[in-house]
Image 1 (tube, rainbow, N blue to C red):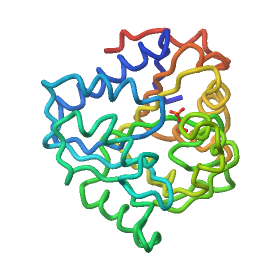
Image 2 (image 1 turned 90 degrees about the vertical axis):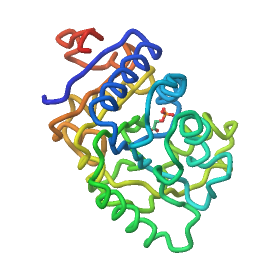
Image 3 (image 1 turned 60 degrees about the horizontal axis):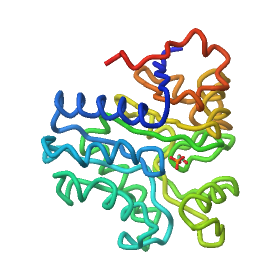
Image 4 (image 1 turned 180 degrees about the vertical axis):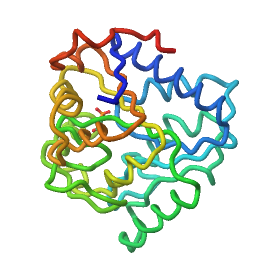
Length: 255
Ligand code: PGA
């Protein structure tokens, strides 16, 4: 097991730990190329970064994992809008330095290819932040028979549509777009470092399968077992199904 695992008391402590690791990365490499994620899990991190007016993101670039099909950047349900609201409007990163796949592009195949090219031509991702779905997905890479490769168009599973409807679409699954553009799993693991967050009991199955189960595209996050520099930051509830939990340190003192 090469992955480092930090178990925190709760969501707040998880957010504090990841914020410290982000700041450390930024200070060590102001020109960091970040891989960022949407969803409820990283909100505590973004909130904390947004308040730190001493941090300089002007040399950083960032690429997000995914975007819903057909939503324009100014649509309040789009991930572009989410990132603006939660983070980009609060830090000094210039608009020309952050990127999300454009789900409203006319030619989605070219959009995916261009996105991968842009990541590569910027030197690849230094630090990729991930959340995890209740079914073990990362980005919008849903359980399947094969790990996906580059950025591509995905059909969302009923489970993901339901999870997202409950969180962002007032429980109405009809309002959730059924497809999205997502960086592929193999593209994600090209990042030099990866930090993956999980909070809450509903993530416990996905966390234990990804960390202690077989590496399989049926649990996309299990691919992280093959990466050399992965840190899981998970709260106690998300860690509750880990079989070897007692052997893992309950600590935030790694910093
Ligand atoms: P969440 O989503 O952070 O809103 O739980 C994570 C994910 O689905 O990848």
